Image 1 (cartoon, rainbow, N blue to C red):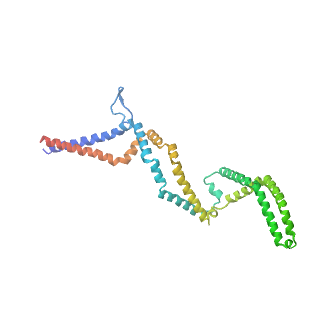
Image 2: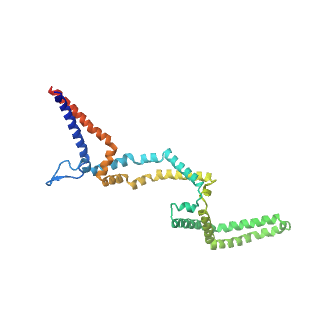
Image 3: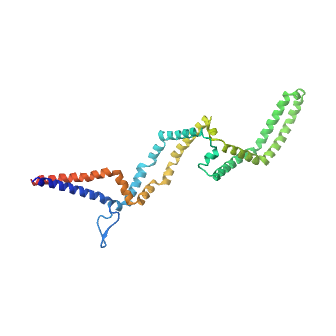
Length: 304
């Protein structure tokens, strides 16, 4: 009868399908060890839950050594495409701000609090005040100002009416002592008042800057924008080239991947794996059915 020829291949196909399906499911299930009357049931938990720590460690090592190592990241982060994207982002930002009516303070408040802005202004202002104040208190500043003042007086005297009357000779004779006296008084004034003078000036200019519209800060400053862009790109290249090894060491990608996989619930892991290789796993199951059918047919031929 025809059933005598159909049954062996069909039975083989069914057996192959079921065994492969069970084998694949046993990769993930059960998630925990099972016991009957205190006796451990073999093959529980499934292979992946049982070997999860070892698999996590192996994947973490593979990712850190082969996929996200220094060479690969440097090649990606320093590629012309990535650097070009940074330059494009700067150009896009400048283009947006060229039409932005917001003041610098209003723009900064999108990212910082009022207290943060005030603290930054204070810190920058203090730094500039100390730097300029120290320069103004330098003795050479007073000497330079006194020299320029006396030179200017001599030049004006020589070219004016007083020069024609011979007063320029007297002024020239008095230039040196007057210059020393003037230098001394200028240095005293700067020494006593420079910090307050500079602090007031810096504070006023800082407030004016914070109240300037963003469009005024970026408009007609193509050269400065280009310099900033080159500086940002250069700083980015230096950070990646010089600090990437330390950043990778601090990140410890191996540890991050390993811990994340170990923390992952098996239901979640199973869902992720099946979503990625669902078709391939189904193909393995159907391949089992095909092989079972072939073996059933082969056995039928042997019995003929």
